[in-house]
Length: 254
Image 1: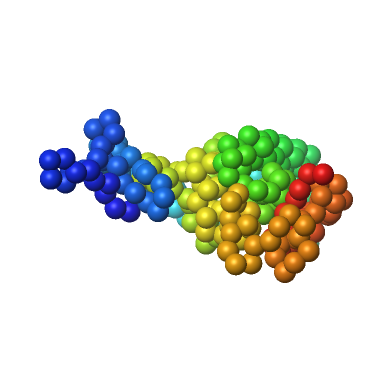
Image 2: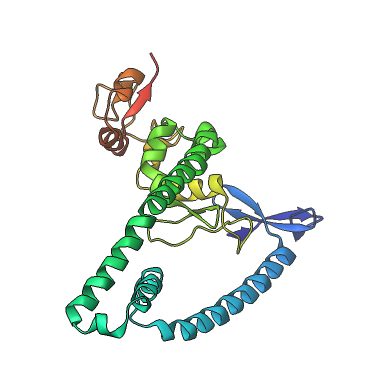
């Protein structure tokens, strides 16, 4: 990024907005909030220290339980064993049998709860992330492909952590805001950053698929991108839609 400047009486000054300098990143202007960034860095450093100390304390406490993979089942098994007298546990095979039965009982008891939890997580994911794609201004204004196709291609970059939508790039790194350094990018900014890094961006962003020497008219009969109707697109499977998008196919309404 470079600082945006203005000329006044033959002198060069940094251009500001609300007292904050403006930087140019490609074709975008970003207002840099220096005090806010310093405060954010300070806060993040404090949080990182707290997380590190909590992690170290937790690791020290967990060493006591090395070798126990399922604490809940272990507790239940101990309770079951305590109900038997020593004379009933002479044979090692009987001990193993009792332990396995106790573990199985616990697993069966909580299996419905685990399944319900998975279902709720899936519903929450679809509502928050799917809804964000449906309401995205960036998709509506900048993208030349339908929302379902965008979600099918880029949905894997978004997850929910602690109730918030988090975006990660192709390398698995969290996507941070360019306008607010140190803060996670919101949904639309994150999606724009991810799309801009996609090798197919020229095929899916408005005003780009028709540029360059290989562009062609709306018929799609030449060597360029092929057009398909909305009904043809709706008839495709999920995988076929992804492939069509990767091949630069454009959906047109007829």
